[in-house]
Image (cartoon, rainbow, N blue to C red; front, side, top):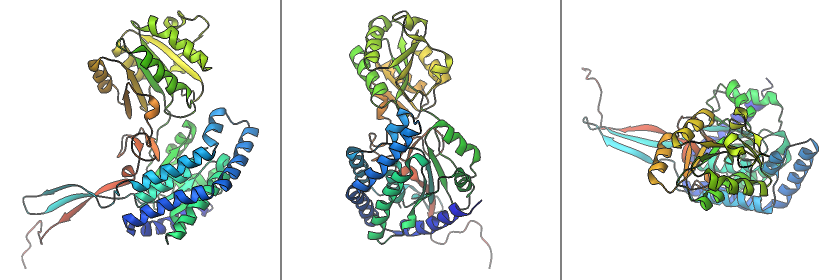
Length: 420
């Protein structure tokens, strides 16, 4: 090991103390300053990003990768807006979530404190550089960022803006540290730093997340993939279901909350599937279905178990007709990834049965899968979506980057009496 990442982590760990000791107003002003710096530095960010996109395209990157990588003025504005939302949130540090007095007079509190140093390992998502930094700093943490090589120039340009805001606030730049050398050996080094890093969050494809989980000696929050289902119940409003289907599959097929499988109750299939197939094909979606689905359109490819387990991240959708809600739930239990499930129904009992019968991090009743996103769910931004059942499940915002500790207040109570 070179020690390169260890030095960065040591500096970030030391800088975290200053962040944790800063008051809420200082951290809010800092993050607002970061948003201002992103907009002031937009030209440099977009120029760096254009180079990254051109290189990635020349290297044969997929459309999904290019979509995640590309920035434009609207997306830069979106990053700045997300930072302002994070800045405006209620400060989580020092919040007492529970307090009770014990029979012996002790007051036992549970209080929110920072995690410490968070490591973000991500691929072609330059927005993560800004949003992860803001979320971590808001929660009193420092962050060590290791982005993918395909976004290296974009990440560096964004980090330059963030460092300018830290300097202006009189806080150490090392609180947001970027691993600029993207060699894989440095990822391995980072994952061994159990004495410095409190949590690692990988954000990217399944292969990246499995690599991190298999090599880490630090705690890891992860989700391997997003196999998201839309179940159209017998009592569904067909127009509503069509809208949710098209939005969930076609708006950004390369993201983890996009739909990958459509399940349709057999009773509603004759009314719904012909319209659904036509709507999907109008949006250039390749449909793969079971025999019951193909009965409505013989040109549809046959769906296999591999298709039902796939996160396509593309304009491809697997379809299956099911006999009832229990069969839909059984399909989800077999092929799902605990990410996002959607039911379309006007039957309240069916909706509640679906909610109880799934264990995914987000369940949508008559709402698009695309709402499983920190910004859409009121978190301002998200540092990732956890399908790991630890202290956080689902989109992770500021509060998920803190932990609760016990604070005990007494008046000299001792557990055992010891004579003079």
